[in-house]
Image 1 (cartoon, rainbow over the protein chains, first blue to last red):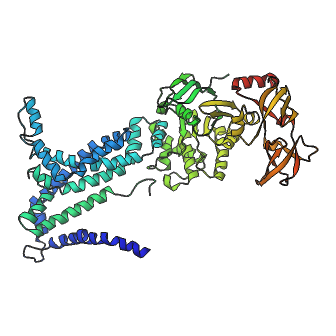
Image 2 (tube, rainbow over the protein chains, first blue to last red; image 1 turned 90 degrees about the horizontal axis):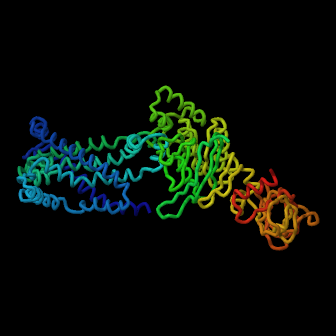
Length: 268
Length: 362
């Protein structure tokens, strides 16, 4: 029986080795090679020495942070009110629905919406306002990024709140806490696990956005994701691209470590 | 009479579907007593508790706390605390923080909180458990933490929502003693909700028996056990033999084809009634000395007693609890005293019942 179980795991294992472990090893390997294929530390030296790359890293982290923060601020109340709704399954479906559509399609849709001749400007013109450029701006980039990431923040927070035992809220009220105290002392701390998973699910992918930085941000927002794409596809400097990739992977692990710290209190 | 601490006046509660869960409930709760709301699930007992706690508002009628109408007062502004059925302890806090929760909300000074939490823990025999996580505690210990968390706030009334139902039998018995003792020591009013009649009989000063949104009988455990108002109460509280009969006149009732002397009065002559005889009030004797002649069907050993099921000459079934043994199939006599017979009228209201009892017992 046990033998069969291992057999079942083989397809996944092959997938894991081919598409997860091998690429990571390759990236690490390439990051120590120069364009002639010789071992070198120059890529890392370039990365740390040139302000350009550090600036890019900072940009990536900064934008990912902003995207995460704003999605969190929007998502938490949304998730909270979702738990209070009657037809919450329907509402939940409406929130999940956009995630089933290809990200590229959504980005193109936004080009249509944001463009100089797009829906928003039509709307503004209707009120006699001058057309405004939304495409290729920081704000445009942020809005689309948030739109794409929002469901990934709402769902884990919603699940966390949904699991929360109603009698705990009653107990808090019973012990004299008003609605706000109940929220800060009981509801929010107990939904923190959901918030953390949401932050992970949004922050980490946001670090390596490149498609929408190009399509919506018009390459005005240069992140690590964009830099990797440039190095691999345009300048063909695989070594440098890999180095940035390694930096990104490390950044992801740091975020994972920060957001999945040991559970406090009674939970062991 | 002293002003009651809690009064319900014609309280009706309907949920969405318009079927009332509580139908015109009126009662008074006096200070310093142990009350039990007893009834099967769905009888409305938890709804009453929630209304006292402030989690539910009456559809009609008024609730008074020390003479003040409190229908719309939110839960956090009431001087009552609740011990919840599933304890509802905060999983993200340790024992100390759970118990200190209410005191911290009241912004008490730290040293006062410290001292009160220590006292409360001592009271529930958990001294030294301050730093424990809730998940590290057993069911019985959590139960005690929940009690400590409520009483540390010195409520005027403590509400207990089936707090013992999740504990095993032995622990439940132990907690019954502890709760009763705690109530007497603190002197505060306890309102205890349960479906377990043994719990109710063991702990209460006063029991409210509920059925289907009505309070059917109010009284001390002894009153309710010895003089149940109707079939429902007799059947729900304790084991009983309930036999149909006819009240011939005061102090004389006919059932099982025979006439028996009894101590019930104030019932119309020849009125059809039901007669209750508790299994432990029936004694086994030989056929000649028995008031009833019965054939033994089954004998079950229950530990402290035998439970004997038998039938009389007109096929009424009788349950007897006795320490004497009997052989299945044998013919035996059942003996009982006039006081052991309790006669119940059909559809008698509690007011009528009480008035009738007062008229000849008073």
